[in-house]
Image 1 (cartoon, rainbow, N blue to C red):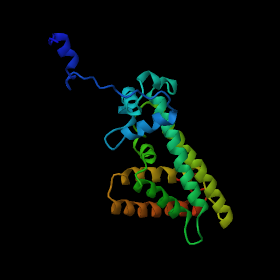
Image 2: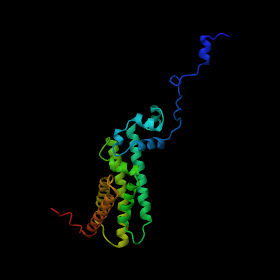
Image 3: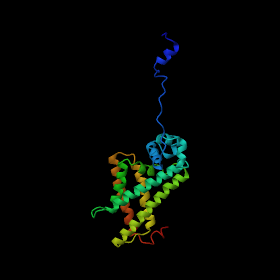
Image 4: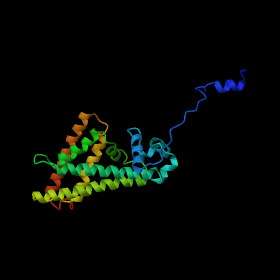
Length: 229
């Protein structure tokens, strides 16, 4: 049988250069949590939520960009969901730590050490609360502020309960809880990228500062701040 050109073609194996490799299919089913986790993987010291694009998040989640819109209107809405999750998770951790307080451990020390432990564990959710407060859209900043208000409300309840148990007076509990919360988050942002020993040093400083605030709020007469001209 003569060798024809068609026989050569049929018998010739495909070249590696011309062989097309089939891409794995993109995910068909995806949940909101999958997109949140994809965004978390992209964040870091050099990347904030405001710098992420919808296409980046979709690529990390292994979905088509249009599938993103099934769960979120835009990246800002995803960022707000991320902030809500971060705040809820951290409040739960600190709340559980306070419940387990032993007689030889103060509420202030337990709360600060629990907060700092989350930093040492590299918890991305806490890092977002600390890092993202001054960037992003107005809606994003409002979401951060809302979470801080939740922390302040829970702390205020704790402070009033402890004052009642101890038979002491707490002046301006709302302002005291706000001062304490803002201090912890500000110092936490300072400690976040520091080495371990420096973070522990900052934690001890925060504990002393909080105790000073608590002592002042307990001893200051009601008229002191009204006539401080």
